[in-house]
Amino acid sequence: MSKNYRTIWRLSFLILAISIKGNCSQPLQSMYYAAKKFPPEKMTYIDAATGLEITMLTTSAAKDDKIYQTHPNWTADGQNIVFMSDRSGTNQYFAISVKTGAIVQLTDDPQPGNACLSRKRNRMYYVSDNKIWNLDIDSILNRNEKKQKNEFRQKVVDLPENASLSGTISIDSSEKAIYMGVQYTEDSWGLLALDIDTGEYSKIIDTEFRIGHCQAHPSISGLIMYCWETGGDSQQRMWIAKADGSENGPFYKETYDEWVTHEVWWGPNKALFTIWPKNEEMLKKPHGIAYVSIKDKSLHILNQRKYWHTGGSPDGKWAVGDTFDGEIYMINGETGTDRLLTQGHRPAGATVHPHPSFSPDGSSVLFCSEKNGNWDLFLVRLK
Image 1 (tube, rainbow, N blue to C red):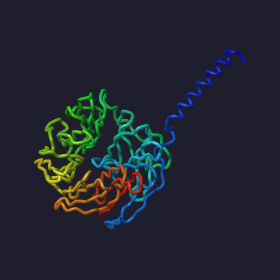
Image 2: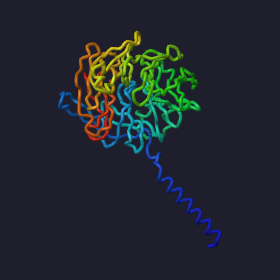
Image 3: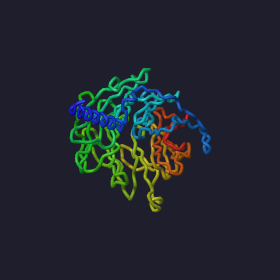
Image 4: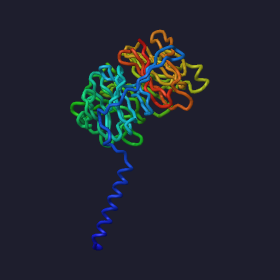
C-alpha cells in the first residue's frame, strides 16, 4: 500500500467515524411516522371522595400533556382528544379516541410547537420549523399505513421575518384568520392577523409588554382576548381588542392588589379568570373564580376558593377549577355553588398542572393528573 493511499484511507475512516458519532448523538427523527398506532391504555376507577367514575385515558410511563384550557382539546366531531406526549421518543402530537382509547401519532417533527384545533373541521394548525402548518387529522386517522409528514399537512406560511412567536396562535371563529402574539425586539411586541387563504399578515396592535394567551372568541369573529404575560403577577393582566386594532384596552381593569391569571372565554358574552390570594390579607378581599362580561366589563366573583386554573362550558352555564392540592371542582354559573368532582391528582412532589377543560358538548371534563406518578390524561363524565 502506497503512502498516499494509506493517508487517503485513514482520512476517509476518520471522516466516517466522526459522521457516525455525530449521528448517534442526535435523535433518530425518521424512526417514527404519523399514523403510528399505540394500543389503548384506558382504565377507570371510582373516586374515593366523590363516588364518581374517573377515566384514565393514558396510563403508560410516557409524559402526556393536554392542550391548554384556553384552546380546544377535542376534534371538531368530538370523537378524539389531541394531546402532546413523549411516548415516541420526542414530544409529538397524538390523538386518542374517547370511545376506544386507541392512540394515533399525528406529527413527526423535530420540535412541534403551539397548536390550535379547528372547531369546524378535524384540522389542526400548528407551528414547527418556523412555519405554520395545516394538518388534516382525518387523513391520518382513516389510514392504516404509516405516512410521511408532508402527505397529510400543508404549509400555510412562514412565521414573520424579524419576529418570534409570543404565546399562542388562535383561529378566528370564521376560520379565515389566525391571530398570534409576536416579539420584535427585547422590549417590543404585537398582535398579528394572518389571512389563511392568502398567507398575508396584518398588524393588529403593538405593545410594550410581552403578549401571551392570545384567544380568538369562539363565536364572535374579530374579537381577541390576550394577556400581559410576566410568568407571575402583572400590573394589568387581561386585555381585549378587535382584529382591526380598534377598542384595544383592559378587559377586566384591576382595581386593587390582585393577582389575576388564567383567563379563558366562557360562553358567548363572558370571560372567566382566577384571582389568586397571594397572602393572608388577600383572603379578606374578593378572590377565587371570577368572570367579566363583554358588555360592561364589571367584576363578578363566582366562587371563593384558592383556585389555580379555570375553564368554562361552551354554553356559559358551568365553570371548573383546579387547586394546588389536585382537586377538581365544578361550579354552577348561576348560583356559584360548587361540587367536588375528583381529588388526589397532585401528590407530594407533583409538577403537573391539571388545566381542566370541558368537552364541546359539556358532558365531561378533561384534565392532567399525576396520581399514578407521571403525567396522564384523565376524564370525568358529568352526564
